[in-house]
Image (tube, rainbow, N blue to C red; front, side, top):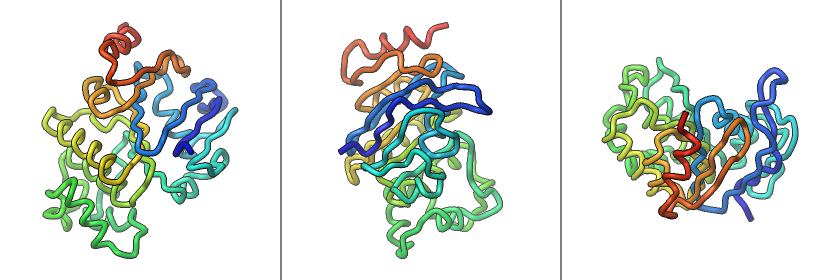
Length: 232
C-alpha cells in the first residue's frame, strides 16, 4: 500500500488552476523530490495534499485513507507532517513551547530524544525565543518539530532555501537518518538540485502545473535531465 497516493489532482487559488491533473505515489520509506522553476505549482502541490487548498479534481489518499476533502488538522492526524517554506513558528514562544505545541505524544521526553538525535544544539536552546534563532536554526527547528511528532509522511517545502552549505549538509544527513531509522516517507519540494538528488530516491519535474518528467536519482543522467527543465 502507498503511504501517499495522488490521482489526477488539480488545485489552485481563487478559481485559477495552478496544478493540473498530477498523479504520483510514494511507497513506505520513499523520498520523492519535486523540482521545477518558480511558479510551476510545487508548493501548491504540498498545500493541496495537506488540505490548505481545495482540490478541483482528483483525489488524495494517505495510507489508504481517503483524504481528499479533509481539513489540515484531520490530514495531520493521519500521520502527516508539513514543513512549510515560510518560517511557521511561534516567534515569541520558546523553542520548547514550539515543540510542545506540535507533539501529541504523552511522553514529551521521548520526543526530545528524537530532536536530540537530529539537532542536539536545540536542547541547549529550549528556553530561547524561537524568533531569536538564526534563519538556518529556525529551519532546523521546523524540521525537528515535524520529526518529533512521529509523522510517517513529511511534506517538506524548500527546506534549503537561504541556507549555507554546512547547514544543507546537516539537513541531508537528518533526512536520510529519519528514513533509515523510522521509515519516514517524504515528499520534498526543492530548488537545490544536488541536495535533492543526494537524499531522494526518485525525482519529478513540475512544469506549468504538470509532471513533465520523472526518474530515479541514481540514474547517471538525472542531473542533466532535470537541468534541461530548469534552464531559462
